[in-house]
Image (cartoon, rainbow, N blue to C red; front, side, top):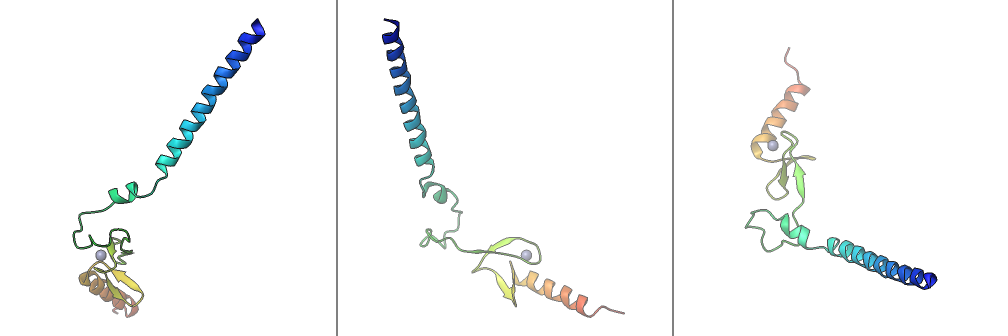
Length: 102
Ligand SMILES: [Zn+2]
């Protein structure tokens, strides 16, 4: 009689274990679904509402380090800047470094 009770107990524990495994698998699948996380990262830019699926590449300003969208950045040579003012400031600084005042 004790063996039968032991078998029933093992069966119940086995069923519970399978349920726990399935629950963990469904939770990981729900967390890995794309779309929900990307939609939350959308900022208040109303101009780029048409192409929300493809986010604009961000470029780093060589002067202040701020990341700006590619369309709003100013490219001078191989470097990108957040504004024309920073591009001019960086150019003036590098020009001063190339030709130091004596
Ligand atoms: Zn800048």
